[in-house]
Length: 480
Image 1 (spheres, one colour):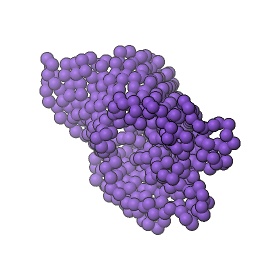
Image 2: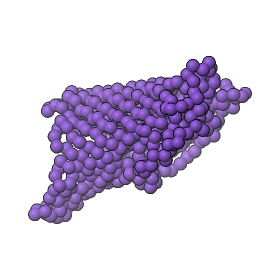
Image 3: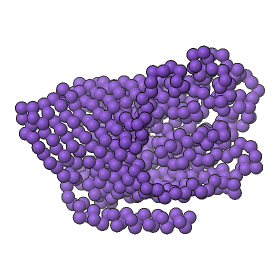
Image 4: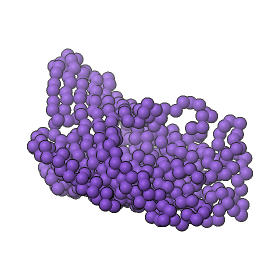
């Protein structure tokens, strides 16, 4: 741990050095600079560069362009508990974590709205993150079509540029439903306050993996029935929120100024998601491989219900965000299959249930300039019997807890800020559902390494049953 604390001290010193020149700029306006050209009369175009990006407007059309970049230094130290445990996936790394450009505005009329969000660090296959069109013809009912970050839970749909920590929580990465393509309607009920905000839609749903029964529909998939990617997927999603004392801005802290932060705000939301698809995994359903139908469809199917409830409190620069999650997956056979539910041994799994909860608290020591935050969350992942075993020893993802501390220094609000955070993640390693370590990779993708698994048989069966990861990160974000 000596090298860990040395790196933590070094990063703190670096943060202090970076913030020194920012003190002079802190008293300036949040507008990062502006230029204007054009008269805007008789259909002439206006263009403005300000704190909300570069904006062009003409008679009946508007376009706003913003780019968000996050440059990060990460130090990770992994310690496995047990004499035969994995220990050594330690690194120091500079990384451009995100680089995104958003195009948004309206065409013909203000009611016809659009957005296109491109992520430059994903590669060409996942370049398009969001692309949707919206007919906003009334407050109570609006129609949308395209691809969006699914509005299921609060933290996932909060922009990465408005987070208190540099990454979303492990809890969120275990339960979110990522990007989705479909059609949805939304609206607000209430004049002075939003008594009810709703979103309901139907989407493709694309199975994240044959051992990860969540949606991930960012890629553009061809309409090929036997491509092994799409097999009867469909997803329904509902999100409800109430903001009885005034709208809570979609973020993970209270960035209101001194003229308004004395007003108490809170919001409560719930999300319900139903996802069905075929899947093909020989370890979860041993007879699902080798008996493909003539059409190429899988003989096994999953349906997953995921529910969340979250609450959000804001007052005097203090924020608290609480989230609860519940997920249940059932498995079924389609057509002729040798799996017998009356067998004396459990030749395949019957269901999976995962539960998680988390809380994140942040406080602005200096209004809109310096904030600190803490995070705690826990995931209780289900173990299951598999392929003739008589005990619930196997798992797809680990039981995990996360504890974090963050400090944000805002030079120009979220448009230019420095974030330091420190994390400790403890994981109870499961027996893998197969010999491939990828059985757990998707649960933690984008935040932490896929944890190793214990071997189901052999002398190391009881060794290294826990794994601890210490992470220190320093990030510079700029938006223009």
